Length: 493
Length: 96
Image 1 (cartoon, rainbow over the protein chains, first blue to last red):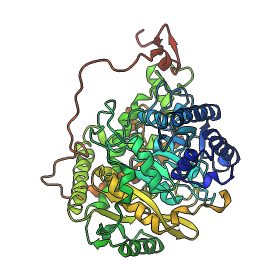
Image 2: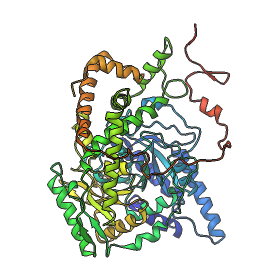
Image 3: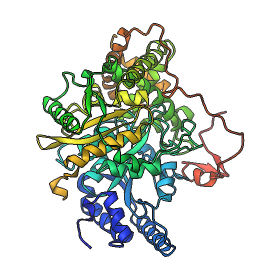
Image 4: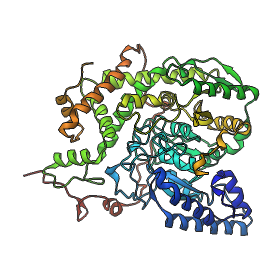
């Protein structure tokens, strides 16, 4: 078999498996060898699970043989290897969430997403590194060390799904799952030349995803293409009674939606996305992409999101508030890190938490505790939830006039490791274009649109509620006419 | 807002049940002050007549029948506990 299997998309690998040109065991072995060769350079993984992967691959091959015998067609994901962000609970495989607190935590059950991709016959290779409890934009808050960007290992890969992004960008897996609370799929996808998809809030079950900010958290995909995202989302999206915010709604045929195309598309381009913080060269890439959309018959419409500038301040009230209550469960009693020789219960709580959490997590818990404390609740939390409604209303009004909203995913290409770790607010502003989407609960994606100084940059496409199918069709149309998404970092070719 | 003092940081940390080292207090005071100054931008937004968002999709909480649906995984769950005995979680003595 050829040795370029790692460069293939999920759709291409599925065709090879269907044709019998390779087996899942061969594919899995190939990717495990690549992980062995490059995983440490990038620090992309927290746990690699080769035995489990090979067993799953054998099972997938056996299942395929049975299907072939009975003349049935295998699903498009059967036998395709991938990695899970280490925030998804995996039965019997430790799940750390990038934290010392959960360094030895072995979940007794699978997250719904893990279950669904497992049922589709996908083969998990490893658990990807991430910012601690998904709190970060550079993957530098991980207890297990920072992840490097495959395009330049002195740069960050983005975060919090940084290990997921590095793994797919370096072609160590054709898919990584991610979660996106304020941009944690889209921002790393933009900084590593991937297609990152965050579905509508409630589309993918949160059951078994370690919670950060429950009104914002949503799981999605990091892949090479929109087509691959469609294939995987088909398996991930859907009602789950075990998540109280899961939406019971018919799931469209995403693969069929890829053919929708761009002709007649109304694209909203809000000037608020082109503020003074935006690198002019990134802005130029967005304009070039808009030219391509126009060539394919799209119309550009002026829309405004007047409250968008408030989204980062709103987020840094709401997300820490939810984090401070969600992370109250780590008490050193039932699971997670416990301090040595506690002298009483308060000492047990305080030192277990103080030792188990890193600085950024503690900072967010304290921010949340402060904004929720007596006398401050109205001024911070309640006010933020009102401004959040204004931001959602802005989007709603815009979507009365357009099908999608387009802008840059990030203000700049990837920044240097250590460059923004001193000042949290500077780090937070990196998510200025992505956070509004989470506050409103909308679906959005980032897709490759060019390079600045040899580093990839991404455009963000935002859709109305449950317009995943439309977004995928638009992105696929763009990717049929361009090849940005097919470029890969030379060092990992 | 005025800068948080190390005493305020200690008090917030205690509310959150987080031990922090004395030498870290000044740094937390500085960064938390920066964050609170940053989010203070919200003060200038007029929200007269706006109802606070309760759910991004404006959906009510779903109900389900009161029936047990999950299997018993107590043994596996307790395997993660720092200290258990006879199926019970152990903590330092609470009542003298």
